[in-house]
Length: 503
Ligand SMILES: [Ca+2]
Image 1 (cartoon, protein in one colour):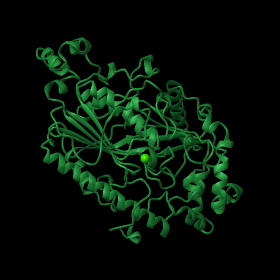
Image 2 (cartoon, helix red, strand yellow):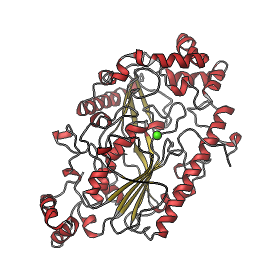
Image 3 (tube, rainbow, N blue to C red):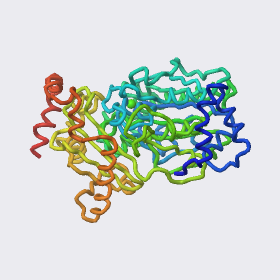
Image 4 (cartoon, rainbow, N blue to C red):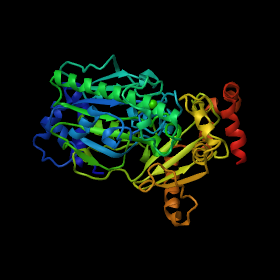
């Protein structure tokens, strides 16, 4: 990571007092920089006007369900076109596979335990700042259209918009287009024949799963149509050349074993950036990036210094108030191939509709994934597998009675060992657990240490943190709801807690 030179740091420090007099910090910095040789991170923003930023966020879309990420089934021509015109990241991650903490880390540059937005349907701690503050201070109008799922409102002072329209006006804009597609609640299948689809190996391949996949794929294509509409409007507004476009898939789909886990099919995300004249078309990067890196990157692109931004939260590495992530602008520019050495995962059942406490933590490098399930004695239960929300869980239970492969998939989803370890290069769906294989003792030890130091930095105390929320500290608050589902879904409940545990 290249730090700004002392000279550049000095220039940025001058920005605040100058802003009070002139109200045009970028102009002032440009004048100051005119006589300074270009050697570091401020150069790009000092050479050009600030680009508009369009951040398109899907909802529960698995990264591998896009044509440009290798899907042979799903039609996504507009998203594929973005990838051809920009850079596609093959190793991008969110630290949580749940909606609300994912969005809040993306918008704040802070990991969930540190920001406070760890549970689903939760809020960051008072005083936490977000992209809406940081880019406004750099002269942007910062809009959000679509899904929010964050709080409190003072921490996310977006200008609210509706629909798929690109903002007009002279000031640079940042528009977060937070789609609700393809979150479950899918439409009737159109254009996808269930019998012809490829079912990924972590799912039970049967008629019900295929029917659900066809409906989910139909909604992905609808999302892709929306991306096409946005791109057409960007062109009509004559802002195509001055706009940096990001498309990212959020966490994995609601199919059992993706969302609500720390497996790659939950945490890994599609990440595509198009920036005309700045990013080489059709480029690809396997640099490890994570959602907390996004705001620092955009701050740097907008002409700010992410190292001097006050995030409103204490406890960053080094004890300052900085972001948990770092700008990957050099990767975007093609000047660097690497970024993070490790990326992290944190899961909680806090804020889930039903199910008892079940914390999960993970760390990943380019090759290996280490997962810790500290309350592994428990069965993993949430509304999705007890409540049959996708209308195929009961069919999995039915098949598990006679099909050993289906039984293994179901068992893996609800009962897990304390430590899991995967070689993600050889085993991208994390199905072959190597935790007990002595050949991997060294990387397991190394990654365990790495995870522990991250948890210390975050103030994360594992089980204690899981039970710290009043909603999860007493199971009595959760179990009555489970009881209600038990009555409606007796087979599922019995399988998880009865027959399954005896096998
Ligand atoms: Ca989501």
